[in-house]
View 1 (cartoon, one colour):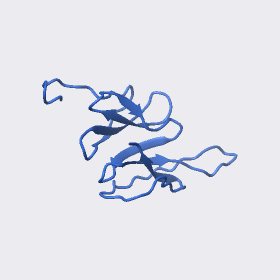
View 2: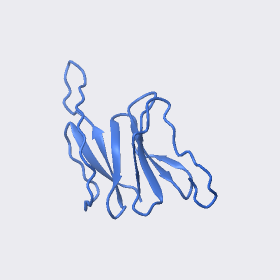
View 3: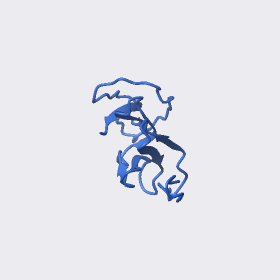
View 4: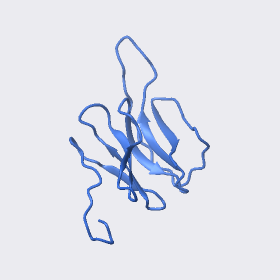
Length: 124
């Protein structure tokens, strides 16, 4: 809801499934959320309350979800389900979730390679 105009604003709507995870940036200027896609994997998006525009933060190649901001608002973290073990039987995926860290101090880029990676993305 836009407090000044009392207008209800729809930030995003999923074509399939539901948007289950969303978080506000520490300065309340951005909303990050994970949205299931009709084609491809779930993506993480950023919505700017100032410009009223949505930015696609991840592509649909891997399932990305559970976004959260660092305490200082400089980093956007999310969980990305990835498997870097090619086999003749085809890809396999492993899903695990971790709680959003309350305060993270991390230089860019920070990436852990494994079945499920928490990635840091400097977005400002």
